[in-house]
Structures are given as structure tokens and as C-alpha cells.
Length: 231
Image (tube, rainbow, N blue to C red; front, side):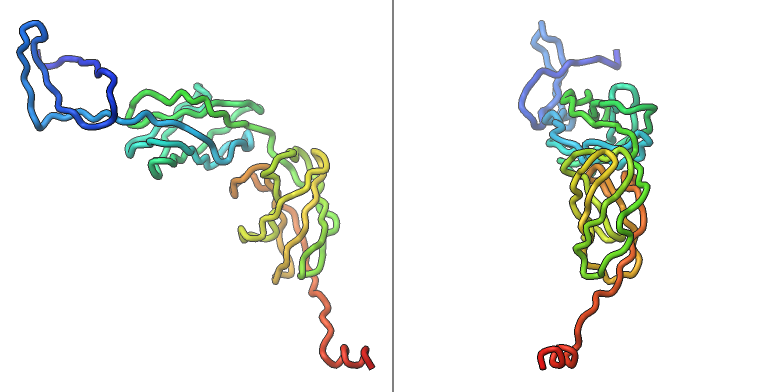
């Protein structure tokens, strides 16, 4: 016979030589060139973001330990298998598919066709948020305007945030008032018109929904005006 199947016994991670032979005759044939590697079992410890819209396309960061390099398969709730990307030994990237309705699903991964993880870390699909408007729609470029955002599906979560403009450093935490109202303080801005985006999670992707905000130049007294006022 030219083919046999062997079941590996449990042991610690590392390389071992592979030997074949007759167990009862105590006759073994080994070759130093044939090696088998025991790998540590991959473990998923978290997801970033941990929630997103039912429309999918969320760039999901799977965080954990012992992610070996190789072809990655992501299992989404046990109902769909998709190719993933190995980034580092603690980071795998998966692009999530769309679903029909809000649902919680477990995310598991398999590397090089090995058994899937069984950590049951949950991702939450939710209805996409909607932004209807902003009050007020303008404020001084020095920032500090309390802008009320009107919309739907705002979640009372620590990741709820507004972004004024496209720069990541203009992301500010939002104060949740209700599922349809949140409050954000505008940061200082050198632009006259900026978009205002809102997200329920901590991913800078399609979870954002936008509206507009206009900044006005803050009046600053010149030296002559100050001296005249003091006379």
C-alpha cells in the first residue's frame, strides 16, 4: 500500500519526526526529512468592531492568539464560510456578508483547513443607523458647538461617535439621548463646510451615515480694538 492514515496524539507544540512501522513487530522506519509540526490551538479573544449593519461589508478584525500563517477560512454563524486574511499571529481579517435581519452570530476561524475554533465570540448584526438632520447646522470654527443629530437606530453604546469632516482626529464621542437623538460637540476646524458622520461602532467604514455642518469664522479682536475698548 502507498497510503495510510495516522491520528496524531496530543502533545506540546513543536516539530517531531514521523516514523512508520509495525507496532506489534516493533519494527519502525524513520526519516529525518519527514517532520510533523504540532501547533498551538488558535484562540479568538475579541472582535473589532463587535457589531455592524445587516448590509454587511464590515471589515472585521478578529483578535486572538496563536494564529499561524496560512490560508484562513472565516465561519460566520455556522451558515457561511468565507476566505479571510492572516495579518499577524494575533490578528485575522474577515469581510462580513449581508444578512436579512438583525441577528447575533458566532465568528470562528480555520487555518490551513484545520479544525475551526470553538470560542463562540459573538458579532451583532443590527439595522443600519439613519441620519435625518442636524441642529444647529453651523457653528464657530473654534469648536464647542453642541450639535444635536436627529436620526434612527442610535445605540446606547460606548462606541457611539460623531466625526466632523474626514480626518480621524475629528472623531468625538456622542452623548446618547434616545434612539433618534444624540448630542456631539464640534471640534475646532479650519474648513468652512464639513460632513458630520455618525457611527454605532468603532470601525471607520460603512457604518457611518452623514449629514452636513458649516463652520463660521470666530471673530477675534485686533490690538487696536482692544486698546480702544480699554481707553
